[in-house]
Structure formats: structure tokens, C-alpha cells
Length: 180
Image 1 (tube, rainbow, N blue to C red):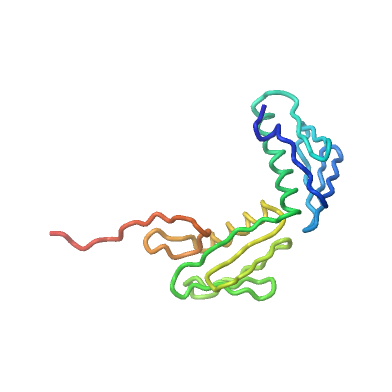
Image 2: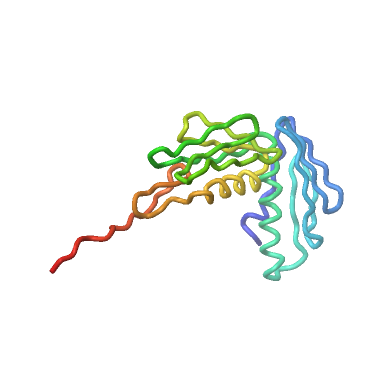
């Protein structure tokens, strides 16, 4: 039995879960999320929690079991608490600025990079070198943070670029002078 998949997903106060066959909809104080589960997984609402069951012990069913349960749990956590990723902008003259739903980044290129935020994502820029991406969908928050980081990934020589907060960048030694 999958260690993750066999755990029931508790439904906290103020969250409504609707299970209609393979369609799961979760509504909470921060918003509403829905997903369609794999047709071979059975989803049931029992005693204030959601349980996911699998038909057999095949490898594909085992992996789908844990993944389906994790996706449902992320939906419940998202509509109650939400998710966030923090990014750091490192480099002389590298800055971030937010105007409405448009994030403008100056990253050492000849032009500023303009990034339009998708629906369901909130971005805060408390300092010009810090970006906080938040929302109710864990997948969307991670994807937007990865796209922003991909605009200028940190380079290994000076460490300049956009990195996740707390991310360690392994540094390389640069070229040395001639030793003859």
C-alpha cells in the first residue's frame, strides 16, 4: 500500500469538497480549485475526509494512488492557506518592479524584461531585489516562479541572476593567469 496514498485527506472547517465520479472540486476561503482524477482511481468522501483507492497493486496504479492523493491534498491546502515561492534578484543594477499585473525586471540586458502575470497569481515586490509569488494552485505558483527564474538563472562565477530564496549556487573558480 502506498504510504502517501493510503492516508485520508482531512477536510478542515470552512472547506467544501464535491466528488462527482472522477471530478473533484474544492471550495474554501481563498478560492476554488477543481481537477479530474485518473479514471482508474476511486475517490470517496468518508467521515469528513477524502480517501483515494486503487484497483490493484500494479506499478502504474501504485504511483497514481499517491499522486492523486497528493494533488487533492494540495488543493485543500491551497484554498485554506495558499502557497508561495520567494525569489532573490542578485547582481549590481538588477531590480524588479511591479506595476499592476506587470512585473518589470532589469537584469543586465539592453532592455527591461516585461512579464505579464497570469490569472490566479499574486506577486509582491517588498524590495527591488525580492519577489514573492503566491496563489492557491501549487502547480501554477511553482511554474510562474520557475519561468521568472529562467529569465536570468544564476551563473556559477559571480552568482548573478534570479534564484530561489535559500538556494545554494555552487561557485566555480574563474580563469587564472599564465603560470610559466
